[in-house]
Image (cartoon, rainbow, N blue to C red; front, top):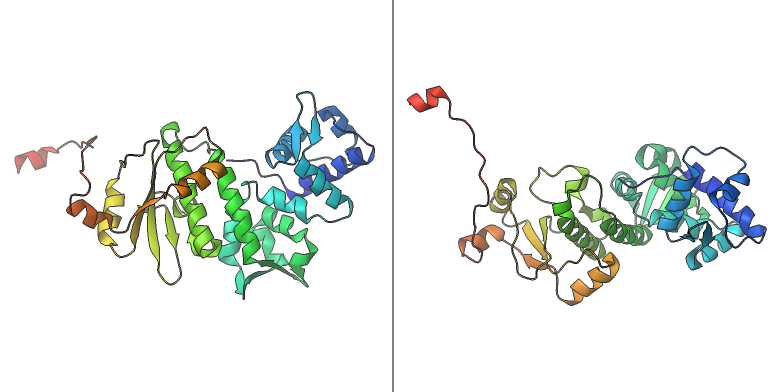
Length: 312
């Protein structure tokens, strides 16, 4: 899982960078950064600087760090006490996607905006909520009020960042499938808005037989498959087949082919969309019955036959 620094540590990190920037330092080492710290951080300094690097705000020069072009803009605005570009860059990193999703699910819609009491943020989204609240334009009295369009944009960027950062629980042979899953997540969020797209396999577990659920006018259960090849072929679990048969009107399969893990996910997503991916199969069970697909057993699960069963 990607590191999720606290808002307090990120604020302290930002203020230390501002001190170095005000002194005219073009780059600095970890030790020089620690020397300007005025409070103790709860996370290691090296990890925090690396996190800002993963957000595109800092660049590593081997012996030290310097602001990137995006960092120069964000910290220039921050020097004028405008924290929103800094906060948005942190939120788009992919580290806080789970919290943003919980905020979307738990907060109330107010037209095209999301409204949540500030007092509820520590429960729903302690880190992401605090970062959003840095932007005064997103606060109305005692409420956080953010446009759904902003959250959709942050989550769209987050999906692409997470596609590049394979989580530790994803096995090596599933990395292509993980990237495909996030491409479908990005696609559906763009179509429907993030609030109406649930990443079921991540947030609720992979035992449901599908990866993504959409809500709204038509509820859909989407199973996602990915391959390095353009030829359509994929593994299907017993549970996935059961759901396809039980929910023919809601089930949908997305197939993303020609995935190359060496490519930048955002660039690859755009290229695959131009190539008409994903291939969408609306009723997989019916397609199997029509023999559009040939099912081949690749493995068997064996259980010992009890003595009483043998006697019968």
